[in-house]
Image (cartoon, rainbow, N blue to C red; front, side, top):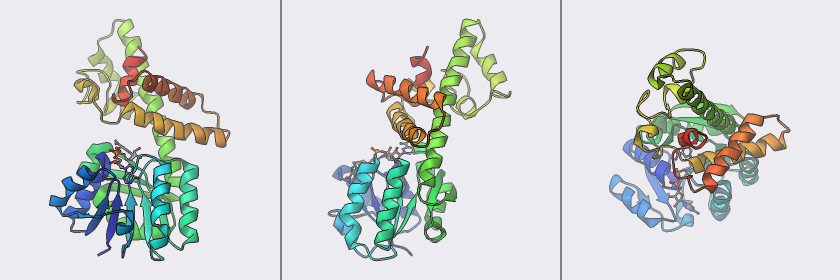
Length: 290
Ligand code: NAD
């Protein structure tokens, strides 16, 4: 069985590690917050005293960290002590260019690398039902596949390095713009005197239907249970959505893509964060725009 190192044991990482431990993998873990490490020790996690401790005699290192700068710092710290052929799988959401830089650093040291951001949130991490969007080589993907199958319900090799992050940027830009659109449709309906439940029944089964309506309806008491029924407690926070949209915006600019809705969505979520509402679920953007 492959020996695994895991860096970043926060909301997502702790749950992903738990699934690996439950599948009897030996995992050594590190987080700058010792409390998060301690909570996983009873589940069988081995504690790394520092980052270098994690890189000793390891086959696969998974990172689940807040941003690309931190992932790069972690990689720079351990890269010289990893044996050739070690696989680095970064599951954090980071920008496409940074992901390519990390791949290059790994290639230069004869290490394997995958960018493998996820969709599915904390619930998906808990239940082992994440979707992994993967960029890298076939060899690296094959090595990681058994672990993707434990932590997720779907993984797809999207293409070469950076394509996992690129796919994630497209997905979350679409999610943000559809969520804003859903809010506008319900606001218009309210101002036209429509019953929101009846509007939901039609929208969720008509051409306007989408994940943001059908699975995550942002109107309290309407549709399946969602953060709207819980004072917009996340879920997936508006500040994380802003981070993802900022990654998308960088990609929009660097590729000269025309994306006025995605660009506007980034601005809207930026306003929400500036007004100290970033800790609310991202679907609260629909109230914010009212
Ligand atoms: P989180 O803040 O809960 O966890 C990040 C962890 O990294 C924290 O425990 C923090 O202490 C640790 N950390 C920070 N710097 C470190 C360092 N230098 N060395 C070691 N550990 C360090 O975040 P999260 O919600 O678990 O998200 C992790 C990543 O997954 C992010 O990139 C996020 O965008 C992405 N993501 C999150 C969700 C979600 O719903 N939360 C969904 C999809 C993707």
